[in-house]
Length: 226
Image (cartoon, rainbow, N blue to C red; front, side):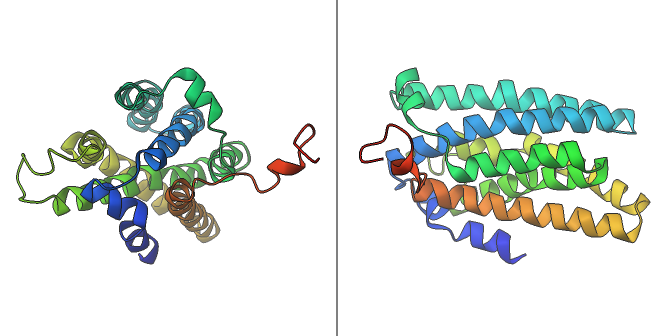
């Protein structure tokens, strides 16, 4: 898929891989990702409630908890490492792309069926594992000690490990099962939802690299010159 390759080649991930990504960009990314995970968790909870199979219900419910509790703990570890206070985080405004992506997932959760929803959720699993494995493979020297000097190694390890790979496989199986039982029109909507979410994944990294701001910020009530 061209989008997946474009993500691997994006400067954000290229610099994350060699440890040269600026602290400011990674801090911006973390702030956006922490906010995204709340919306992602809510969409996962809706998927759990609609899942026809008990195993899928358990998976999506567990993934919702994982997004809100476990992954946020990883973020908080980085907040501490980089000396980010609550005031610092509050000063980083939610980006247009972050708001757009979370709003899209929640809109699908409210207006589309279960097959379309889990297709839209799949990229966050699949893309992150694909990128994490690729980055891990680029670390100098190979093996378990590779990249120990990379300040972002904990992030890389989180998305490249076997446990996360199993979560990706479980989500893919649920989506494949839903697609197999669906009619052609539903499968087309599933593909459209999957593709749009992949586009948002690319945009999310791109927006962090650009430190994306609202272009209308200066027009808000109370802004200088407004």
